[in-house]
Image (cartoon, rainbow, N blue to C red; front, side):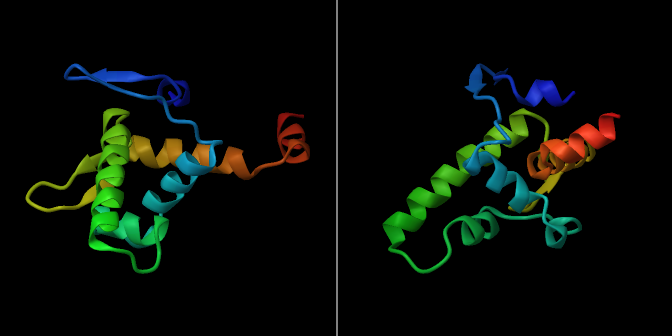
Length: 120
């Protein structure tokens, strides 16, 4: 199951690249969408943008940032990690997404000694 998000997917003729939870960018995005404060009500593009790009910037820069986050959220949706909350501008992490994100973030933070002890 975890290997599927590490491969590119095609949805409705649109190719979405694979996720790399060990990369700084993808790992940070996964951390943000899995925050506890978004568990019930979900999150918006604006919420993610506030975490990824804190501080003030020009309107044109905010538009570029929002567009980039829209593409990142589309990738998470294509991989089945998030779903749209109908009738709103909000997204929620799916049950499968919650399991996969938690596992990948845990593996990302674990060190070799911890993994070796668990395997023994």
